[in-house]
Amino acid sequence: MTALRILSVSALMCQMSITASLHWRKALYPSAFRVKRGTPALLNPSFQKSVEDANLLYEVLLSGAYMDTARGTLHISDQELASMRKLEILEVLCEDVLPRSLSEIQRLGAQLALRRGSLRMEDFERTVLTMVFTAQQLQHTNPGHQRELWANSLVPLYKAIKEDLRPVS
Image 1 (cartoon, rainbow, N blue to C red):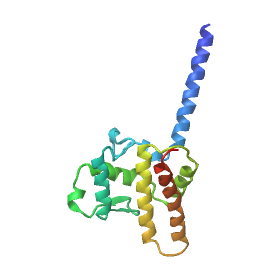
Image 2 (image 1 turned 120 degrees about the horizontal axis):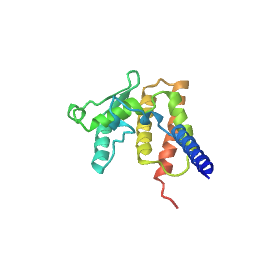
Image 3 (image 1 turned 90 degrees about the vertical axis):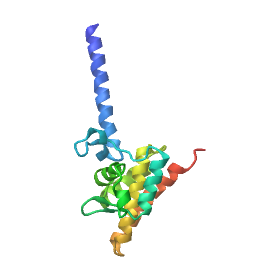
Image 4 (image 1 turned 30 degrees about the vertical axis):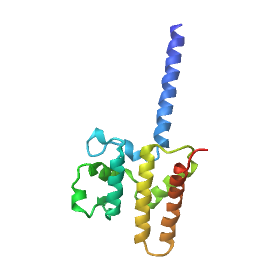
């Protein structure tokens, strides 16, 4: 009888281990699950938690903020906005979580195309920010093959956002 219980518990533990490992592989933004800057509080960071946060993000983007690919940093031209403590989480998102290379963005687009159902709030936010970064890269890329690749990587991100915003019928 105890052997059967031990076998059952072992099978359950094995199944939980496999499920957990598959969860990590399926994450759209796997770097979000790594501790940033030595602070466990920044594990899986999310910027927008209220309407005020969404308005602040809109104001930051409208002020001309851009993400530097070479150094991976977020630059906010408005000094008053840049000094806000709330933007620390946005900086962590842009510098540590979002994909910045063309291949990473193409991988994300492919994963989003295969995904069914709506995005989690964090994934939606990160996809929008990745789309903003891709559009900025597209703007600064010289015409040619590289520009086409950036443009083609923008389309699946847009489709995923559009699909997520569509009402469920």
